Image 1 (cartoon, rainbow, N blue to C red):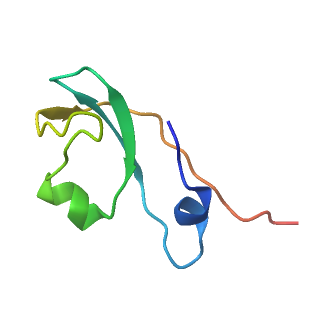
Image 2 (image 1 turned 90 degrees about the vertical axis):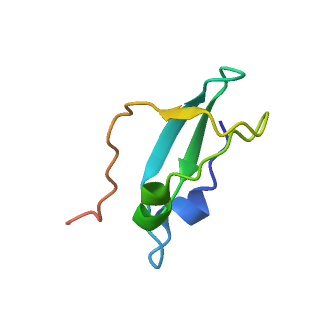
Length: 68
């Protein structure tokens, strides 16, 4: 899994991670999506292109500023 940390944690763009499993090729992949993109549900597998994907339950990750 390759994640662009600059996109994940930049101040101007904070978006959740979504983890999916392709029902066709069984690959698991992670996407960084806005809530609107996620709600549209137009996800396709980056390996085989299938739109038969299901969202997996993933742990929640929060990054906060240090309060020192």
